[in-house]
Image (cartoon, rainbow, N blue to C red):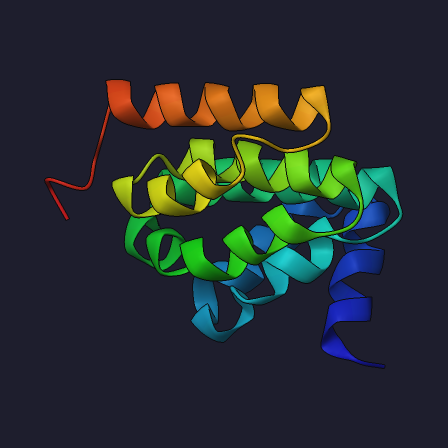
Length: 132
C-alpha cells in the first residue's frame, strides 16, 4: 500500500496523533501534506489542517520548507483545495508565502479570495520571516 494512501486512510479514521508522530520522526513525509489536502474525503482535509496546526508548534522550519509545495495547491482546479491551501499558508504564517498568495488574490471564487486575503493579513500582522 502506498504511504500516502495509508496516511490518508489513518487520517480518515481519526488517528491524527499517530500521524503527527510519524511526521515528527520522518521529515520526508512533509511533501505529502499537499496530497492529503487534495484528498476527496473531508475528514482527511480537515485532519491535514489539524496536522499542520499541531506541527507548527514544534516543527516550524519543516513547515516553512513546505510553503512552495503547499502553494502549488493554490492553482488546483478545485476551489475548496485552493482555499484550504491559502488557509494552511496563513497558519504557517511565514513571509515566504506572500508571493504565492499575492498571485491568488484575484481567484475566481470569492471564498478563495477571502481565504487568501485573510492569510495575507495574518502573515503581515505577525510576519515570522524576520526571525527565520
